[in-house]
Amino acid sequence: MTGNLPTINIEQLYRKPSLLKDARNRVDRLKQCYNELFGSSSQVRIFTAPGRTEIGGNHTDHQQGCVLAAAVSLDALAVAAPNGKNVIEVHSDGYPEFVVSLDSFAPHIEELGTSAAMVRGVADYFNSNSWSVGGFNCVISSQVPSGSGLSSSAAFEVLIGTIFNGLFNGGRIAPLEIAKAGQYAENKHFGKPSGLMDQTASAVGGVSSIDFEVPDSPKVERISFDFNDYGYALCVIDTGVYHHDLVDAYASIPSEMHKVASFFGKSKLREVSQTEFFNTLPSMVGVIPDRALLRAMHFFEDSQRAIDQTKALKDGNIARFLSLINESGRSSWMLLQNIYPDDAGAEQPASLALAYCNHILGGDGACRIHGGGFAGTIQAFVPLDFLDSFKRNIEKVTGEGSCMILSIRDIGAAKISHR
Image 1 (tube, rainbow, N blue to C red):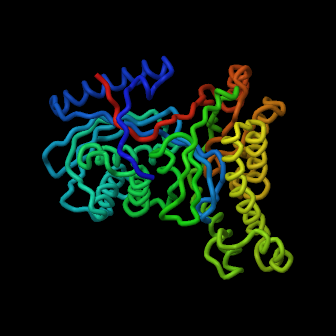
Image 2: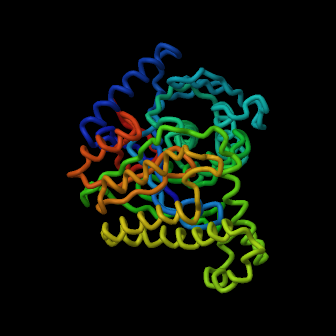
Image 3: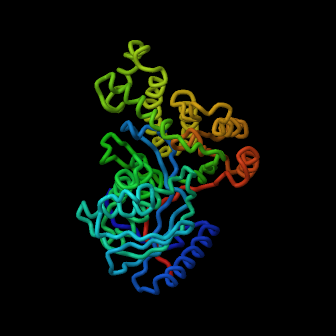
């Protein structure tokens, strides 16, 4: 995708009165904080990058499949200006301040797993791809809660990339290139083998249909769609319990899907036709673990569902879309099996939340596991006239404040015009 960095009036970006009031307060506070820390500067600019929600294609991106994702109304904001030095100084609410020297772009082992690694990684990517980098000071405030499944890390990476774009490159860097910089930083510097979906959704904005057949150059189609116009609200619900050692659980999904692909002499399931897979299924039983076969079934069906969901949104067919969401949720539960880890035992918060969600909705709306799964968050599409009751009832199980009512943000990463 091409195009310059959009400069958006703050009233256009935060259209709801409550969001606009909050945004103005955040910007004013960040400006004041910047002035106190660094002094006033005529070069100060305001930047934003939203969180994201995965809507369709659960664990399909790492097999070069299709996904449907969207930017949401929660975002990270930064006030930043060049400092004429070769360092980046970052002050962020709730986190220790840090300084990154641009004398070296190589990964620093002591920065592994830190925000500094993300900043250095984004700078490294741009420098390696002939984009301009430079030192700047910034103060950041993020509404995207860590561990919420809304990808606070991608929002931060895209925000840093957008600052580089706006301050040093005249806004010429395309959204997908900024997304790639974020993924590179997370993979090579931060130490997390993430895909490109999260950063793409944040950078592009709106609802994004993404085809990862060519992983480094995915096809991205941006769709403008507001669920509120069709009588539904998007909710993400924190199940209240997090498993801290899920590396093996997450890793088992691409590993088992790879076993199936390898049976056909391929590296990814995208390279295997669905027809060939099902025709060959009987001969794989007893050779390939059963769960791997089930997970492969999920991949083929959920990747196609993401395509079908895109068509349903384009057609304005909300009933078809919700039906597909429910199908995806059942597939994740039954085939992908990423609702709880193998050793969960009696503790199954996501299962309970999903089951109770279905009970409350009573056949209207839809719900599914959100993102990686095994714990964390679930997603629900709730009729607007039932929203208050739904929130009140689901929070009886998941806890007060656990249900976040979101809206799709039509604009991705941007520079904000604000007096």
